[in-house]
Image 1 (cartoon, rainbow, N blue to C red):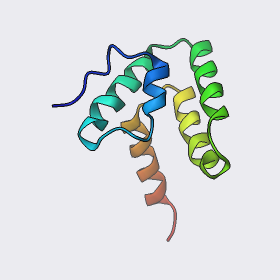
Image 2 (cartoon, one colour; image 1 turned 90 degrees about the horizontal axis):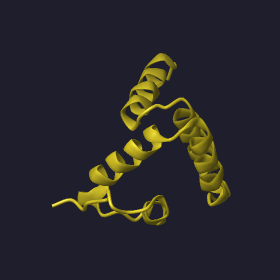
Image 3 (cartoon, helix red, strand yellow; image 1 turned 45 degrees about the vertical axis):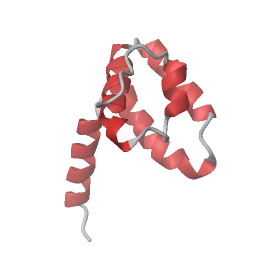
Length: 92
């Protein structure tokens, strides 16, 4: 049974980032997407800025791409579809 993340604060959810059990990942992802989608543009920008402060250099490119999607209100599924479409267009 997946955990209920709806009662946790964003700080608590962010602290769990990268360490969520496999069986809880979908519920975690859904809760994060729901909260980010409900943010105002200003709240989303502040969230992204704070999150970026905690990212080490190695992950900056990956997070930069995620931030671009978040800024445009895209969900995880939309990110995956766009990434696949881009890969299919690029010559191997």
